[in-house]
Amino acid sequence: MTNEFATLSDFRALLAGAALADADMFAAASEHNMQLTKPPGALGQLEDLALWYRSWRGGDNAEIAAPQVIVFAGNHGVAARGVSAFPAEVTAQMVMNFQHGGAAINQIARVNGATLDVVALDLDQPTQDFTQGPAMSENEFVAALQAGWQAVDATADLLVVGEMGIANTTSAAALACALLGGAASDWTGRGTGVDDAGLSVKTQVVAEGVALHGGQGDGLETLRRLGGRELAAMAGAMVRARCLRIPVILDGFICCAAALCLAKTQEGALDHAVAGHQSAEGGHARLLEALGKAPLLHLGLRLGEASGAALAIGVLKGAMACHASMATFAQAGVSDS
Ligand SMILES: Cc1cc2ncn([C@H]3O[C@H](COP(=O)(O)O)[C@@H](O)[C@H]3O)c2cc1C
Ligand SMILES: O=C(O)c1cccnc1
Image (cartoon, rainbow, N blue to C red; front, side, top):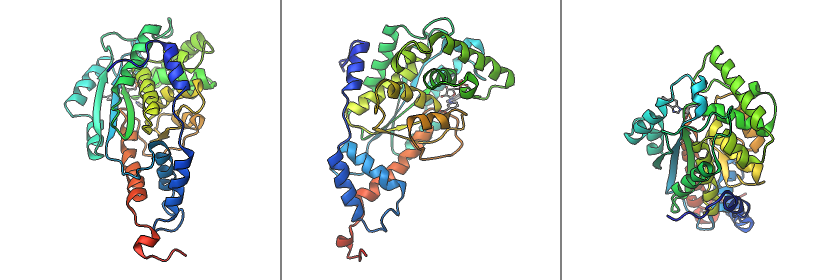
């Protein structure tokens, strides 16, 4: 596929000009929802989800049939600072595991009827340690955005994006801190399970990164400086989905940090997305609040790999199956008052 953008300013223009939800479709879906054989509002948040989904997908009243999960993988220069409980080699090893069907996301995507694509991004070239300079050059950043953009299947009717990248909770914490403020310790959690000494080093690394790169530009520029290839690719995929009117389910702390960079660059950039779950990683609840998204699930997950979002596919499928296929009061001969 040819690239639809060659430069960062082209990408910014696509982000600024992306599609809006269809208010007429939302109204038609609300009207349809009121006629379904249930007490008004009895399907709770499933009703809101169905109206939101139809406002993006249009009027065919269809069930969800083709969800796509994409896991992007990247390596981080800051991994060398001892900010993760696991070594950087685990990123590539887990990519092999995804390819052989052995990871959690393989099982969760399969039982939810989703395709799973794994995109490894220059794993032998970690990004620069962001305490020393920007994580990515502009060319590297644009290449990662393009990889995300191109990975989206235009025939999908739902997109879930997730990541694998040792040390990427450090990047995510630095992005959240730089874009939302507060102390490094407010956003730095244990990730894969660092001990107290590791947490203290990690917090210091986040503070150094924010001191160097905070306030140096908008959300996208901050993503280039403090992010990683897999975070940039998730952002690129989210914008492509918006252009294709494919609704998105957001995953945990790292995915939402990538989403935040878009939201801080362009108001409403995540209107086509819902939050799949609330991760156990400390900062995720506040990150979701900043995005204005209530999570569908609270399961204590702290895995990444798109796992929490992929579990929420089932919730959205349930919402759309009810909306599309329930009988109306008139069809079923059920009295409506
Ligand atoms: C075996 C294994 C599988 C994973 N799957 C996702 N992650 C998760 O852990 C990493 C982030 O945590 P930190 O910042 O502490 O390195 C990411 O790769 C994330 O997706 C994993 C981590 C490990 C060790
Ligand atoms: O919230 C997440 O997605 C997460 C948390 C810890 C480690 N990896 C991912």
